[in-house]
Length: 381
Image (cartoon, rainbow, N blue to C red; front, side, top):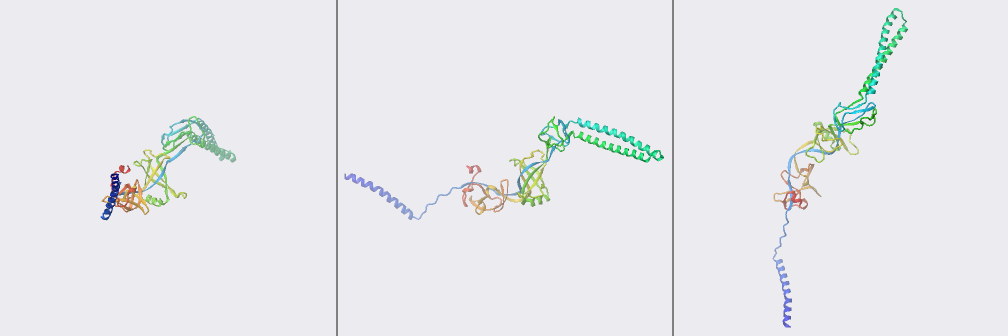
């Protein structure tokens, strides 16, 4: 029994011994005066880009709408049956090309009738003129009374007026016959055909037979805020202002034109001014009704300091960028920015050419953070 008690007592002493050892170890460690070093923070992975200096165009950007240079709705000036259509829908036609033929037979008959009336009245007029000449000799000799001579001369003058009216009727009949053949007034592209062969055409109907749009050259209409008006007028007075139109997302192949029109009044409801640019449109890439992105280049700013737009951050104190120093630490630097163009921002103050700025990974940075420069793909992961 005594042996079991002694074993139990020894087991109770063992935990007390370990507790005492731990307390003494902590006490002497604290008294030694050495502090444990905090773990180092890992470097933040970022992507960087260099600040460059280059010429930057001064541009105004807007959304524009393509308009035909000229639009003509072709109508008939006479009535009749449409005998023939000389083009296909959507075909390019030249100025003076024959488009429609209206049945000319009724107008040919009317012309013949007018010419016959003219011939008849010319014959009567010739006879009346001969009578005037004969009676002029007789009245001098006293064989004919003056009153009778005056009547003959009046009849001759009336017949001459009738013959002149007949000439006008013949000219009008010829004109009506010409109207049977309808020609294109401009060079352009035809639209949907509205009147087909066999239709009875009305003179000056409300609906056009076909609409022709001139697309070479062509207009792009757009509006810009009124504060740009003075600057636009100033540069237009110096030289031709270049305008580029981008179709969809094809930024690499813009269509080039020239600013040719400034509206005579500012739209007071929107505070914008309407402008038009003219494009040669040789490749026919611009089409009436199409919406395009427009860039008006007023001038070029030389030696501008440029940084990627995604490097510029906005904080409580304004805009800033993280600059990577030579020791691979990040420095938060305030900047004054200007225009933004094609993913690049002009930095007017705060950066110099050749400095490196962080373009991705800024959310994990604080001033003084160590950075690890990675490729853009690795940072996104």
